[in-house]
Figure (tube, rainbow, N blue to C red):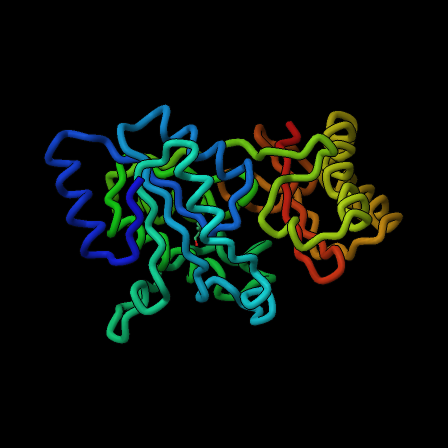
Length: 279
Ligand code: PAF
Protein backbone atom coordinates (compact mmCIF):
# COMPACT_ATOMS: atom_id res chain seq x y z
CA UNK A 1 0.00 0.00 0.00
CA UNK A 2 1.29 3.45 -0.91
CA UNK A 3 0.85 6.38 1.47
CA UNK A 4 1.00 9.92 0.10
CA UNK A 5 0.85 13.25 1.86
CA UNK A 6 1.57 15.43 -1.18
CA UNK A 7 -0.96 16.08 -3.93
CA UNK A 8 1.62 16.15 -6.76
CA UNK A 9 3.02 12.69 -5.90
CA UNK A 10 -0.47 11.23 -5.55
CA UNK A 11 -1.61 12.74 -8.86
CA UNK A 12 1.47 11.42 -10.66
CA UNK A 13 0.78 7.89 -9.43
CA UNK A 14 -2.95 8.10 -10.25
CA UNK A 15 -2.17 9.40 -13.76
CA UNK A 16 0.08 6.37 -14.28
CA UNK A 17 -2.63 3.97 -13.04
CA UNK A 18 -5.23 5.60 -15.30
CA UNK A 19 -2.87 5.34 -18.29
CA UNK A 20 -2.83 1.58 -17.55
CA UNK A 21 -6.63 1.57 -17.81
CA UNK A 22 -7.26 1.06 -14.08
CA UNK A 23 -10.53 2.25 -12.53
CA UNK A 24 -10.24 4.25 -9.32
CA UNK A 25 -12.56 3.90 -6.31
CA UNK A 26 -12.34 6.60 -3.67
CA UNK A 27 -13.38 6.63 -0.01
CA UNK A 28 -12.93 10.05 1.60
CA UNK A 29 -12.67 9.87 5.41
CA UNK A 30 -11.61 11.91 8.40
CA UNK A 31 -9.87 8.88 9.91
CA UNK A 32 -10.56 7.15 13.25
CA UNK A 33 -11.69 4.31 11.04
CA UNK A 34 -14.33 1.83 12.15
CA UNK A 35 -16.22 -1.01 10.47
CA UNK A 36 -18.51 1.48 8.73
CA UNK A 37 -15.48 2.85 6.87
CA UNK A 38 -14.14 -0.64 6.26
CA UNK A 39 -17.40 -1.60 4.57
CA UNK A 40 -17.05 1.43 2.26
CA UNK A 41 -13.48 0.38 1.46
CA UNK A 42 -14.64 -3.20 0.80
CA UNK A 43 -17.29 -1.92 -1.61
CA UNK A 44 -14.64 0.16 -3.42
CA UNK A 45 -12.27 -2.83 -3.59
CA UNK A 46 -15.00 -5.05 -5.01
CA UNK A 47 -16.10 -2.51 -7.66
CA UNK A 48 -12.84 -0.85 -8.77
CA UNK A 49 -9.29 -1.86 -9.72
CA UNK A 50 -7.63 0.56 -7.33
CA UNK A 51 -8.95 1.87 -4.01
CA UNK A 52 -7.82 5.21 -2.62
CA UNK A 53 -8.73 6.27 0.93
CA UNK A 54 -8.13 9.83 2.09
CA UNK A 55 -7.64 10.65 5.75
CA UNK A 56 -8.03 14.31 6.47
CA UNK A 57 -9.79 16.02 9.38
CA UNK A 58 -11.21 18.94 7.43
CA UNK A 59 -11.23 22.06 9.61
CA UNK A 60 -13.58 24.04 7.35
CA UNK A 61 -16.55 21.74 7.97
CA UNK A 62 -16.44 22.11 11.77
CA UNK A 63 -18.51 24.99 13.06
CA UNK A 64 -17.48 24.21 16.65
CA UNK A 65 -13.80 24.53 17.62
CA UNK A 66 -14.10 22.02 20.48
CA UNK A 67 -15.59 19.43 18.15
CA UNK A 68 -12.63 19.93 15.81
CA UNK A 69 -10.00 19.71 18.53
CA UNK A 70 -11.69 16.69 20.15
CA UNK A 71 -12.12 14.83 16.87
CA UNK A 72 -10.24 11.50 17.28
CA UNK A 73 -6.99 11.29 15.31
CA UNK A 74 -5.52 7.80 14.92
CA UNK A 75 -3.51 8.04 11.70
CA UNK A 76 -1.02 5.26 12.38
CA UNK A 77 -3.68 2.74 13.42
CA UNK A 78 -5.81 3.77 10.42
CA UNK A 79 -2.94 3.20 7.99
CA UNK A 80 -2.19 -0.21 9.52
CA UNK A 81 -5.83 -1.22 9.28
CA UNK A 82 -6.09 -0.12 5.64
CA UNK A 83 -2.98 -2.01 4.71
CA UNK A 84 -4.39 -5.19 6.33
CA UNK A 85 -7.56 -4.99 4.23
CA UNK A 86 -5.69 -4.49 0.94
CA UNK A 87 -6.39 -0.84 0.30
CA UNK A 88 -4.04 0.35 -2.47
CA UNK A 89 -3.42 4.00 -1.69
CA UNK A 90 -3.81 6.23 1.35
CA UNK A 91 -3.79 9.99 0.92
CA UNK A 92 -3.15 11.78 4.21
CA UNK A 93 -2.33 15.43 3.52
CA UNK A 94 -1.91 18.18 6.11
CA UNK A 95 -4.01 21.34 6.27
CA UNK A 96 -1.48 23.46 4.35
CA UNK A 97 -1.47 20.95 1.51
CA UNK A 98 -5.26 21.02 1.12
CA UNK A 99 -5.68 24.73 1.82
CA UNK A 100 -2.66 26.57 0.45
CA UNK A 101 -2.69 30.33 0.92
CA UNK A 102 -3.95 31.16 -2.54
CA UNK A 103 -6.60 28.49 -2.86
CA UNK A 104 -9.95 29.41 -4.38
CA UNK A 105 -13.08 28.70 -2.38
CA UNK A 106 -16.14 27.32 -4.18
CA UNK A 107 -19.35 29.13 -3.29
CA UNK A 108 -22.03 26.73 -4.49
CA UNK A 109 -25.65 27.61 -3.78
CA UNK A 110 -27.09 24.39 -2.37
CA UNK A 111 -30.56 25.88 -1.84
CA UNK A 112 -32.81 23.94 0.53
CA UNK A 113 -30.25 21.12 0.83
CA UNK A 114 -28.06 23.37 2.96
CA UNK A 115 -30.80 25.28 4.79
CA UNK A 116 -32.32 22.39 6.74
CA UNK A 117 -31.13 20.00 9.47
CA UNK A 118 -27.29 19.91 9.44
CA UNK A 119 -27.24 23.10 7.37
CA UNK A 120 -29.44 24.88 9.89
CA UNK A 121 -27.62 23.69 13.01
CA UNK A 122 -24.08 23.72 11.60
CA UNK A 123 -23.80 26.92 9.56
CA UNK A 124 -21.04 26.66 6.96
CA UNK A 125 -20.70 22.89 7.41
CA UNK A 126 -21.74 21.94 3.88
CA UNK A 127 -19.72 24.69 2.31
CA UNK A 128 -16.71 23.08 4.04
CA UNK A 129 -17.75 19.62 2.86
CA UNK A 130 -18.28 20.78 -0.75
CA UNK A 131 -14.91 22.51 -0.79
CA UNK A 132 -12.89 19.63 0.62
CA UNK A 133 -14.67 16.91 -1.37
CA UNK A 134 -14.27 18.80 -4.64
CA UNK A 135 -10.56 19.31 -3.89
CA UNK A 136 -10.15 15.63 -3.03
CA UNK A 137 -12.01 14.65 -6.22
CA UNK A 138 -9.62 16.88 -8.16
CA UNK A 139 -6.61 15.14 -6.54
CA UNK A 140 -7.87 11.56 -6.89
CA UNK A 141 -9.99 11.82 -10.07
CA UNK A 142 -12.02 8.74 -9.08
CA UNK A 143 -14.45 6.85 -11.27
CA UNK A 144 -16.57 6.01 -8.24
CA UNK A 145 -16.73 7.62 -4.79
CA UNK A 146 -18.22 5.86 -1.77
CA UNK A 147 -20.10 7.63 1.03
CA UNK A 148 -21.93 6.30 4.08
CA UNK A 149 -25.67 6.88 4.30
CA UNK A 150 -25.30 7.69 8.00
CA UNK A 151 -24.56 11.19 6.74
CA UNK A 152 -27.75 11.16 4.69
CA UNK A 153 -27.82 14.88 3.95
CA UNK A 154 -24.14 14.87 3.02
CA UNK A 155 -24.85 12.26 0.33
CA UNK A 156 -27.56 14.54 -1.15
CA UNK A 157 -25.17 17.50 -1.12
CA UNK A 158 -22.34 15.52 -2.76
CA UNK A 159 -24.70 14.21 -5.45
CA UNK A 160 -25.91 17.75 -6.11
CA UNK A 161 -22.35 19.08 -6.35
CA UNK A 162 -21.25 16.26 -8.64
CA UNK A 163 -24.21 16.87 -10.99
CA UNK A 164 -23.81 20.64 -10.85
CA UNK A 165 -20.15 20.51 -11.95
CA UNK A 166 -20.82 17.60 -14.36
CA UNK A 167 -18.11 15.56 -12.67
CA UNK A 168 -17.68 12.12 -14.29
CA UNK A 169 -17.86 10.40 -10.90
CA UNK A 170 -20.45 7.87 -9.79
CA UNK A 171 -21.53 8.51 -6.22
CA UNK A 172 -22.24 5.27 -4.37
CA UNK A 173 -24.23 5.53 -1.14
CA UNK A 174 -23.58 2.63 1.25
CA UNK A 175 -25.84 1.53 4.14
CA UNK A 176 -25.14 2.53 7.73
CA UNK A 177 -23.36 -0.11 9.78
CA UNK A 178 -24.59 -0.64 13.34
CA UNK A 179 -23.20 -2.21 16.45
CA UNK A 180 -25.13 -5.28 17.68
CA UNK A 181 -26.91 -2.90 20.09
CA UNK A 182 -28.29 -0.83 17.20
CA UNK A 183 -25.96 2.14 17.72
CA UNK A 184 -24.84 3.54 14.35
CA UNK A 185 -21.08 3.18 13.95
CA UNK A 186 -19.27 6.50 14.14
CA UNK A 187 -15.79 7.77 14.85
CA UNK A 188 -17.36 9.89 17.59
CA UNK A 189 -18.48 6.73 19.46
CA UNK A 190 -14.91 6.39 20.77
CA UNK A 191 -15.67 9.43 22.93
CA UNK A 192 -18.63 7.73 24.64
CA UNK A 193 -18.36 5.91 27.99
CA UNK A 194 -20.04 2.49 28.37
CA UNK A 195 -23.05 4.06 30.09
CA UNK A 196 -23.29 6.80 27.45
CA UNK A 197 -23.32 4.10 24.78
CA UNK A 198 -26.34 2.60 26.57
CA UNK A 199 -28.02 6.01 26.76
CA UNK A 200 -27.31 6.63 23.08
CA UNK A 201 -29.49 3.64 22.11
CA UNK A 202 -32.51 5.92 22.43
CA UNK A 203 -31.51 7.21 18.99
CA UNK A 204 -31.85 3.91 17.14
CA UNK A 205 -34.88 2.98 19.29
CA UNK A 206 -36.57 6.22 18.24
CA UNK A 207 -35.93 5.48 14.59
CA UNK A 208 -37.26 1.93 14.89
CA UNK A 209 -40.35 3.21 16.72
CA UNK A 210 -40.84 5.88 14.03
CA UNK A 211 -40.79 3.15 11.38
CA UNK A 212 -43.42 1.17 13.31
CA UNK A 213 -45.62 4.24 13.74
CA UNK A 214 -45.30 5.34 10.11
CA UNK A 215 -47.93 2.93 8.75
CA UNK A 216 -50.73 4.34 10.98
CA UNK A 217 -49.78 7.99 11.53
CA UNK A 218 -49.02 11.12 9.53
CA UNK A 219 -45.39 12.31 9.46
CA UNK A 220 -46.33 15.19 11.77
CA UNK A 221 -47.87 12.87 14.32
CA UNK A 222 -44.88 10.49 14.19
CA UNK A 223 -42.60 13.47 14.76
CA UNK A 224 -44.58 14.56 17.85
CA UNK A 225 -44.70 11.04 19.28
CA UNK A 226 -40.95 10.52 18.82
CA UNK A 227 -40.12 13.90 20.31
CA UNK A 228 -42.13 12.90 23.43
CA UNK A 229 -40.56 9.43 23.52
CA UNK A 230 -37.07 10.93 23.28
CA UNK A 231 -37.61 12.97 26.42
CA UNK A 232 -37.68 9.74 28.45
CA UNK A 233 -33.95 9.28 27.77
CA UNK A 234 -30.84 11.15 28.87
CA UNK A 235 -29.85 12.70 25.56
CA UNK A 236 -30.58 16.21 24.37
CA UNK A 237 -32.44 16.23 21.06
CA UNK A 238 -31.20 18.74 18.50
CA UNK A 239 -33.65 17.77 15.79
CA UNK A 240 -35.89 14.97 14.60
CA UNK A 241 -37.17 15.47 11.07
CA UNK A 242 -39.03 13.32 8.57
CA UNK A 243 -38.00 14.41 5.10
CA UNK A 244 -38.51 13.84 1.42
CA UNK A 245 -35.40 11.82 0.46
CA UNK A 246 -34.70 13.92 -2.65
CA UNK A 247 -35.56 17.51 -1.69
CA UNK A 248 -35.03 17.05 2.09
CA UNK A 249 -38.20 19.07 2.64
CA UNK A 250 -39.91 18.27 5.90
CA UNK A 251 -43.02 16.09 5.52
CA UNK A 252 -46.16 16.98 7.43
CA UNK A 253 -49.49 15.48 6.33
CA UNK A 254 -48.56 13.01 3.60
CA UNK A 255 -45.95 10.32 3.13
CA UNK A 256 -43.73 9.97 0.09
CA UNK A 257 -41.84 6.89 -0.92
CA UNK A 258 -38.41 6.77 0.72
CA UNK A 259 -39.45 9.20 3.49
CA UNK A 260 -36.53 9.27 5.90
CA UNK A 261 -36.33 10.14 9.57
CA UNK A 262 -33.19 12.08 10.47
CA UNK A 263 -32.09 12.63 14.02
CA UNK A 264 -29.29 14.42 15.87
CA UNK A 265 -28.82 14.40 19.62
CA UNK A 266 -26.15 15.23 22.14
CA UNK A 267 -24.91 12.51 24.44
CA UNK A 268 -22.96 14.62 26.93
CA UNK A 269 -20.65 16.66 24.71
CA UNK A 270 -20.81 14.22 21.81
CA UNK A 271 -23.05 15.03 18.87
CA UNK A 272 -24.55 11.88 17.34
CA UNK A 273 -26.35 11.62 14.00
CA UNK A 274 -28.49 8.84 12.55
CA UNK A 275 -31.37 8.24 10.12
CA UNK A 276 -33.69 5.55 8.84
CA UNK A 277 -35.92 5.14 5.81
CA UNK A 278 -39.47 4.81 7.14
CA UNK A 279 -41.64 4.03 4.11
O1 PAF B 1 -18.03 12.11 5.97
C1 PAF B 1 -16.89 12.52 6.27
O2 PAF B 1 -16.14 11.85 6.97
C2 PAF B 1 -16.46 13.88 5.77
O3 PAF B 1 -17.51 14.78 5.75
C3 PAF B 1 -15.76 13.83 4.41
C4 PAF B 1 -16.70 13.34 3.32
C5 PAF B 1 -14.55 12.91 4.50
C6 PAF B 1 -15.27 15.22 4.02
O4 PAF B 1 -14.36 15.73 4.93
